[in-house]
Length: 306
Image (cartoon, rainbow, N blue to C red):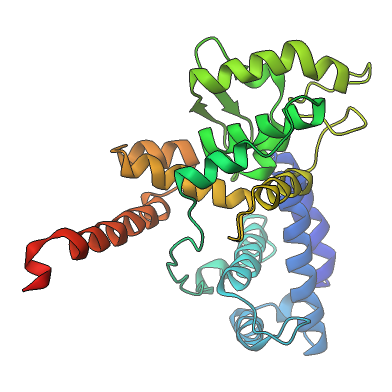
């Protein structure tokens, strides 16, 4: 049996497990890349799919270059190998393999980098003021910016928010099938809830163009916005505000977490809010605040001048 013939069955299994279409598409791409490499090496049959074959592919990823001639990032290599590991685990569970090859795959160690851009409060204020709230699109854009900063959710999560996910009376937003296909509930400030209430009553009905998709933020055709469109709105607002930093939707996520941590929010609460599977992912923000503390210490502590 050919290795490539088993991929559709695994992808169908992922659909049954309710993995998101984007996740399945990425896994399909990673597995196709693996198969193409193995076939180039003369490894096509399932009986040839072993530890050595996986080691060859892992070694190739370490030296593979992008279209721009740069080495693949650690995160990209990790995503490829996670996909292959899941496939190998599936083959073992379904008795196509007699050994669990997933245990032989070692993921590359991900370097812990500090967020490149964190916005100051004054910069956030300028960006928020950029959209023209006198127009429906401008009011919608302001809603997007406010929610991103208030909750720290991702661009894809923002685009997927439905009106039924909102509890503007009590100040909560439910994120359905976020990263890792997990639901979570995040709090929203009463001020932002007030803006959303006005948007729902006065702005969104005109933008829906007689359709009812259920999504909170709509594009010019009255249908669901894409994550890329959400990203573009953030970029445009930052440009209009004359912010020279490279501001993206993830910048709002980093800034939300950092500002909350600086104001004394418990790190585990931030972990829950951001939807991080482990506390290790959230602890990167403590390093940001420690760097700030070091700068303040150097500036004001008398011992620094001795």
